[in-house]
Image 1 (cartoon, rainbow, N blue to C red):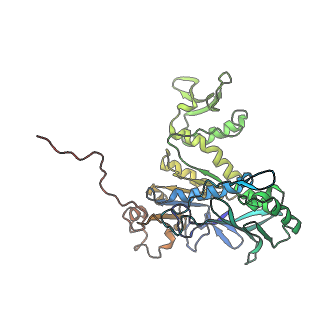
Image 2: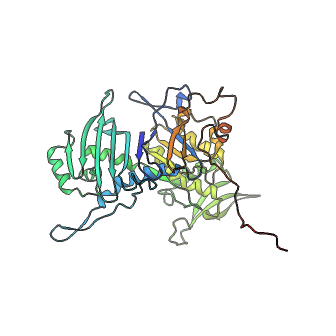
Image 3: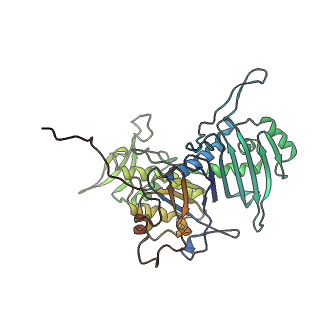
Length: 421
């Protein structure tokens, strides 16, 4: 489970920014909270904000961190036959805050607090690193067992100097990692490949992370084993029938061959006055149906692995009631026994009125006149304007009480012209 995520100097977030998934002491929907150690954890978080406010940058930051952990083993400088560096590998996702001379060439910092299984025990990790386009400057890992207050250090990496503090990485392991470590590699990536169990635990946490961005259309993704396993087809069918019961089955036409894996998939629909269903190509279904079909494998993986699913613009192509149905799978402990978490961005103010979200599950992003984004929670407002029932959160938000809305001028869609004689 993700507990906290901290970023600094990444895109529009110049200053240190923290997304906190630990619950505050409010008496709302306490039955949905995840209990771990002495903490109460949120299963869901919604992030609101104007266009270009920086919402997507939070999602992007987490995606970049997870990507770096999973792929940095592939990154190293080019050397000649004598070991001299002849070309530097450049970290392509280096996007510091660009509008301040003090920060535009400085390190980006990512840091997470999360729980993960290690030696059959669920413990809490604190992991982070700072980096620029050429190298990792600092990397650290700390851990905390259940029922203990303090974190104990596991390792600290400064440039290529690696200091280990725990028997989880013996001195011999320190030497192996240090000798193989390139300036762009992360210790966690390398140590996981070298089978250090504690580093594999950190690596696996990021492996269960999924990040989804909307596209202009829909990127049709076929669920794993869908074409070969009738049970998977039946599971997807029940899932789709939750919002469209006209679909009664699927058919795979093996005579059709295409580079696109979905081209030979057909949906079967009820036919008027006939027991024989009508067949249409999957790609001709509505955009909403295609998006839900494509989301199945991500939702299934999150719920069945207890992972973290990030979704940018969750409402894209989906009706608000359908989104509400989706959220229930994460909020209801009976439907989410492995404590998967969903973090999403949205513009839809109705999400503030759907009766599912706690105040500390509602976050806002606002960008100031200098281009700096700020992230804060509805729970930060100690007095939000009187009785909660007096005026809806959605109306308060749209009236600007919580910030994070656009300041609009009249749209000009045509050039100025004069009426000639």
